[in-house]
Length: 311
Image 1: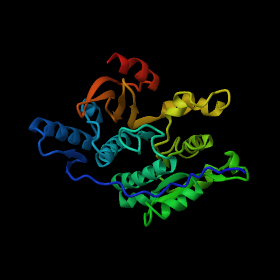
Image 2 (image 1 turned 90 degrees about the horizontal axis):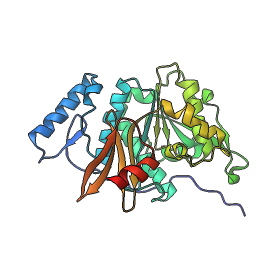
Image 3 (image 1 turned 45 degrees about the vertical axis):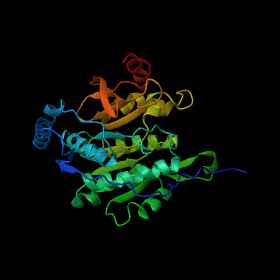
């Protein structure tokens, strides 16, 4: 008997919100000193005036919860949009801020992403822009699930990348022609977790080429697990088209928000909030300490085998 892997997200309880004070989208704790608040004010003022270059030195802390994470991702995305970045990536774990891919069951992780995407859209997309924003889910069945759960009542347009085929039990799906899905009034595309099937990211590249390049449109990939492609998880001999993305597609991408955890004795986390540097952090006595930072994204292999062990 053939078994079909279910990729419908599994309902879970809504993500809890933490209470706090916010200025310009950043949380301000009661006990923060005057100089820290002034730094935040300078960052917000620079961001509002479009001077994102002067905010590179702003030290964004590792988020304490998902509410703070979304606020940071919002600020990073707004700055990237002001800098006219067309292809963006947001990547972080959904089974817990200190988790790694696979810690949570696949359906639960997707549901976590689904709920966080809705909250992210509510923060970033104004009501008048909602009908000009198209969110692509991997399959049509997930669009139905989204409409009946987190995206119920939303004005955002929901769409899909692939559709089932007669050989779905073997992992095959039919590609959707992107030119047929996009409408002239669309301004922003957000692609939700396109990693379950290897064809999904190829369709995302097609979407970028056909509907974003040479236009004013923007595309955000949300939790696409692009590190699988970057690290060679898919052998180029068997997946030549997917491997080619490391040369043709991924170099054009700006990673505006990113968290990747490393477990074990030399554990730590690779963290970036645009337009800041890439930082390798380690948790020491419940506080994150920066061990290393650089302008370009290091490979996961470099972080795991060189930076963390030598820190």
